[in-house]
Image (cartoon, rainbow, N blue to C red):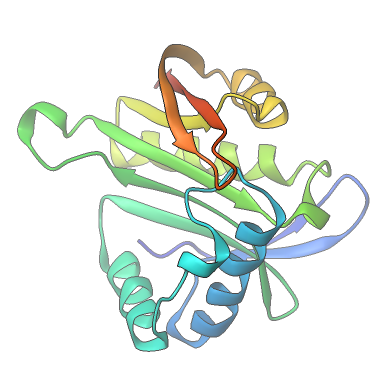
Length: 182
C-alpha cells in the first residue's frame, strides 16, 4: 500500500520526510536495515544475517506497494532511510484476517525525538482504515524504552514467550507479547 509523502517535524526541530519506500530506495533501505541491526540487539537479525540481494529488496518493496493489507511507513532524512514501521496482515485465513502485526525500528540518532510516537499513530490509523481489529507485536523484555512507548500508545501485555531470543553470548531474553484492540 502506497503511503503519501508528508513532512514530519521532530521535537528537536529536525524535519524528515515520511513516505513509502520505492524501488529507487532499495540501497538505502538495505543500509538502514544493517545500521539498525548493528546499533542494538532488539532486532531479530544480526547484521551479518542481512544478506538480501538488491533485486530481492526491490521485489519486496514492489510487493509492499501493491499489497492492500500491509503498509510501510518509511522515514527519510534527505535521501537516507532512518526509520520504518509496518503493519501487515497476520495471516490470510478467515479466522485470522482481523489481526495485524506491527514492527518498528529507528536509527538510534532518531530516537527520543517523538518519531516513534508519530510512526505508531500513523500505523494505528492505517490499521483501522484497512479494517483490522487488533494490532500485535513482540518486544524484547529488556527493551524498556520501546515497551513504555507501546503502553503509551495503548498496547497491553498479553503474555510472554520465555527465552524467545538467544544472543551470541548465550544470554536468553523473553519476548513480551503485546496487543492493541482497535
